Structure formats: C-alpha cells, structure tokens
Length: 186
Image (cartoon, rainbow, N blue to C red; front, side):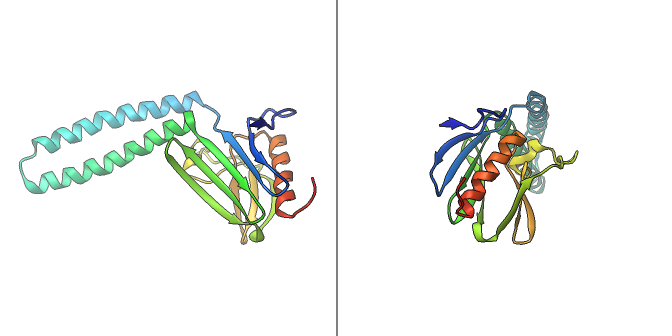
C-alpha cells in the first residue's frame, strides 16, 4: 500500500491502482474528545441498562415484564449504536473503489460496514465540499450520515463522500476518479 500523502498532509493509502480502477483506504482520524464522550455515554447507558434489567427481574406481572423486555431490547440497540461510534472513532476505515462502471464507498468498522454504489453514467461535477457539517450532524457521525469533503452530483442530487482528507489530497483523488470515470489520461 502506498500513501498518497507525499506532498499532502493526508492519510489516504492506495491499495490498488490501474489505468481503469482505483482502490483507496482512508482511516478515520482519532478524535479523543469524541472517544471520551462516547465512553461516558456507554457508562450512562450501562448504568441504566442494569437499572432496567433489575426492574425486569423484580417485576411480578406479565404485562410489566413484557413492557420492560421491550424497553431492554430498545435500550440494548441504543448501546450498540454507542459502541459502534466508539469503534468507528478508533478503528474506522473508509474505502473508495472506482472502476469503469461504478464508484463504491465503503465505511467499515470491525465487522460492521455500510456501503453506497454509484453508477458512473449518473455521476457528474466532482468538487471540494467547502461547507462544514452542522452542529447537530458532526463529521464524527459519518458512519451513520453521508458527510465528506468530496462532493458530486448523482442523478440530480448532491452526494458527499470521504472524510478526513486534506483538501489538496482530495483534489488529487478527484483528478484520479475523473480520469477513470471519463477514461482520460492523468
């Protein structure tokens, strides 16, 4: 794997590159403030999980047990989201795969992943996304939301991909993507 970072500050690594395809891996930058915040969320979640589970064990009526069981299942799913956020902050990776037919973006953390596929024929106007994510949707939420520095039009709507890239590195990646999608020489 070769890093693209030679003249850039980024951390994107070229996994495979040919004239007609490109595969990049970009690790998520560790933000210890967000990691500690998510750890405190896990602590709060764990405290309430024991609280809810204790009520479930002590309940005497069937209806109360059923309601508390539903609450425990929902609360467990919320805790799972917190855990995925922590692992995303520590181990998260974004993978970009471009070939003659499609552009594929994979967000992977441990065995959880999400991916989007975009057909090249519907993609146009790659550019740098200059707007920053809002207060409510921070870039750390990127496993769940589509935020990023590379912006393009797909079937008439704007899409954003690839977090944690230096702007110059993003421009180089856009140039490489365009050369593959449009069959141009770099």
